[in-house]
Image (cartoon, rainbow, N blue to C red; front, side, top):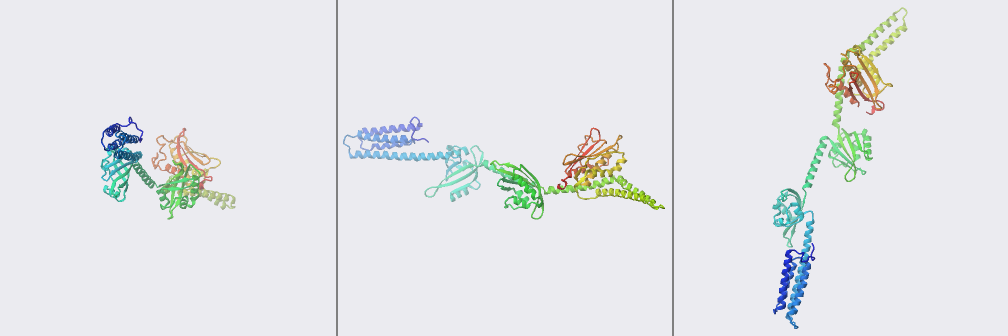
Length: 607
């Protein structure tokens, strides 16, 4: 606020009027004082001129008016007397000058105090907070610009109005309790709801202080108000988000782990504490995780943390935890490197409790093995004629060779060499029969899956022997194209035989009604350093476009007496070994089924 620098032309209209009135009064007082014989202190009335000019608030004009009144007083004193000045006249002049000087000093001091007060008010108006002062009867006595911005009412509209009524204030407790707290401690702080001039509700954080007079009587309340509507909505949204996250983590059994780098300060979510089975006051650390880690997985977990600390963009491991009660949990940890808004580098990860999933997978594997066993038994029943032929043929040969050996021995001169050859043939046929029986017993035996390194070509040959009778009975031309050198695969030998026999039997049945040549081709191939492939191709009726997408679906079959379990079991076995199986329709006709398995060299024991 500028003071003392305004000219009359720049003063507001009321200031011009006041200045003109003061000038008129000054002239009248001077005329009476200088031109009339009155022996009274007329010049005292110059204080009215000083007070009028001072009321404009212009310090410079007030000083000028004061000096002007002093000059007029002295000039009037000189003009109204001859050379002889009486003591009474001098006294009256002195009294007038003293009155003008005192009034001027007091007026200037009052102006200075008013200016200071106005400057303080302007400072309060600059505050972003809404500052409101009301008396003990709740009538507003001060309303800054922040209050006008927050509530919408101007100071002219608000001054004199009851604050709580005008803003329709809703306190968290009855207003009487708020007032009682103010009177007790001279302070109150809380949140309340008010309504703006446009009718919108706002949530306010209010701090109130009680002002008392010199006698200690309560006179007014000064309150600072802040609009926290947006902040509270954000807090509520954050609380909802955190609650959703907690519930989602609890339901999905997924905890969060964050590690700041390079200081390795760690943070766990509530669900992570539950997974590790640690109390909430436990400080998160790598050591705490390693304490719970299964002994066989310690190297894996240490390596994962070392990778993350080294800046690896992604960490993905599965490992086991050993709980204090001796129970084992399976967990899946996935983490990635990220940079926060503040520039800090962190490893943020999710820890999933997959124990139930693992148990379900194990139960499914057991169920699949049970089902595979049942289908093997069923398949053996379907191959009963071929199996009987494979067994009875060497038995018949044994009988024949045994009779021949007896004849060679019963001669007058025993033919020992011929008898020895017959006995050797008997041994070979017995071994052949025993091998057939052993293969059948292995397929019929109920046991767990035992992946091992097997000779793929040898298993193909063994499987062919079990269905050879079916091939001969249906006059099927067999072509075997085995890779050289022989290939190895990592799988369960019996289950691999089951897959091959199932595929060959399906091919035989598909060619049963074919009038032309019936040809079955079985081949083995190396795909790459990690995979081998087996191909079973026939010249049967082929695969229709409608059936192509359903071949491996459970209970889907094109046979009149089929149950639709053969190919689904084959698929579950192949996939359980880390491979895949699929079917194609070659341009030449028929069907081609192929499956891929991992090689057995150096990898089988790691699986």
